[in-house]
Length: 103
Image 1: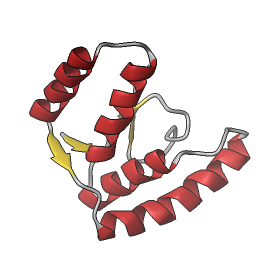
Image 2: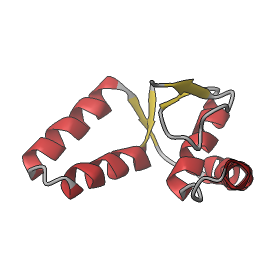
Image 3: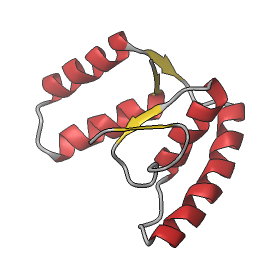
């Protein structure tokens, strides 16, 4: 399992917004990091993310969704670069071949 480094930041932000204590946030992020390979965004991934963003934005318009985030595009770019799947329930990923949908 691969976790893009930005996902740790995004999850940390979510817990902080919800009022979690800092030690709880550290503990949860540490568990994620220890349970997967944390991968950094590099130049190749950034290029993949830029084309993924354009594709996701076009799909979002057709499906009448809000614009996707750059985080979403970076995650999709990394999945494509590594041949991985994205485990999600985010509607921006629905129907993409890289998606494993959570119900």
